[in-house]
Every structure is written in structure tokens, then in C-alpha cells.
Image 1 (cartoon, rainbow, N blue to C red):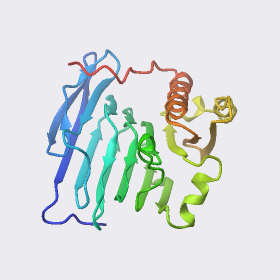
Image 2: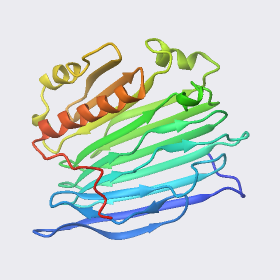
Image 3: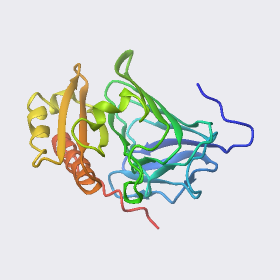
Image 4: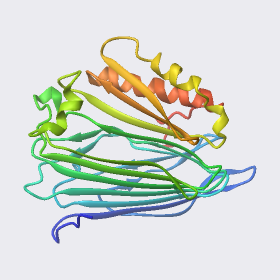
Length: 280
């Protein structure tokens, strides 16, 4: 695991989300430090909306942010951010985002961050570990964009790497490793369909696996309604689904994610929370 330099920003976020029957979900524990700020949470009657704000310009080389979130039994949480995560030129040092999530049986966690934008000359790594007890619910989104396309930057970063592990009980259902460098063949898959591909991975693990049957994959494929969007789903053993999305442009990308999330909530039989509500 990469360690930050002595002169870089070392931030942290720690949350424990608990529930009181008949009264809803609340933050039982919270602590945070730059480069992350926790805005006022909002209870919409079904889900606690928690928004993470980066008050700085973004992540620079050597910066490190460690996140630990626990969702207890009965709690329902949407963890979101109102702005993109920007990775700035690293000058030879790597920025690190380390995430650890735990969801107890009967708990629900929806991780819905804004897009990640690795800018020219940046080196960044995201490490994610998610532990679910059987009977827990998860919706997890991660993204990768080609950079500041409007400014003429298309895959101009040095390296963007990520690792994701999701465990249900004692069984590992997702283990993904990737390292993308525009200067070598690792970028070929992303650019095979679109020169400036926008990529998203959306994992959904329901509390009751039978609510997402084999027909779910066909419903996902139907979301690809034009040539600027490709979307497909694959089953994660008996636990849930992984949805992969490629889009040719930002507007189509965001719409594809929105539709995929709406489909997830429809099949889960739950009302989709509005991530724009932050209680401010």
C-alpha cells in the first residue's frame, strides 16, 4: 500500500450509522479532516443522506484520504458527494484514496460519488474493501473519466489504478484490480469503442437475492438505446450483479448511470432517494 509523503495532506473520515426502530437512521459516530468535510446529513423518512464535500481543489500527489464507514443493522444510508473528485498533477508522487465499508445484516449502503477526473500528469490509486454480513444491501458505484475533455485533455494522466474487494459473509464475490496508463496497452480496452470513453462499474447486492433474477441482465441491456452508450450486467455468483457502462460523452454517461440506478431501486422494491437533498 502506498504511503503519503511527509508534506502532503493526510485526511480521514470515520462514520458509524445506526438506526432506532420507528425513528430512522442517524450518525452515531463521526470524525473527519481535510481534504474531506461532512455536510449536514438529511433524513428523508427512509434513508439518511450523507454528503461528503472536498473544500480543497482536489487530491494532489502524495495526498492520502482514508475512509471507514460502518452501517449497523436497520440503518439505511446514501453516501454521496456534490462535486467530482479531481486528481491533480502528481510530480512523481501518487495520491491515495483508501475506503473501507462495513454493512451489518439488515443494513443498506448506497455509495454514489460524483465522477473521478484524473487530470494531466496525475498518478492516483483507489483501494476499496467492502464487508457485508448476509442479509445486508449494497449499491456501489465507481467511475473513471478520460479527464478534462472540455480543456482538450483526453487520457493525459500518468496512471490511474484501483482495487476493489467485496466480501459477503466469508465469501469474496468481487476482486478487481486495474492499472491504466495512457502510454501503454492498458488503455486499449477503454478506447476500443470510443476515443474518450467514460467508464462506470455499479455493483448491486440485495438483501434478498431472489429479487434480482436472471431477467435483470436483459433489463440492463435495454438501457443501451443508442450508439453512444454500451451497458451490460454479469451475475456475482448468487449474491448480486455487476453492471459495466461505457459512454462516448459526459451527458450520456450521467444519464446511463441514472437509469441503471433507477432500475436497481425498482427491482429492489424501494424508493430511490434524491441525492440532491442535503438538508442545508
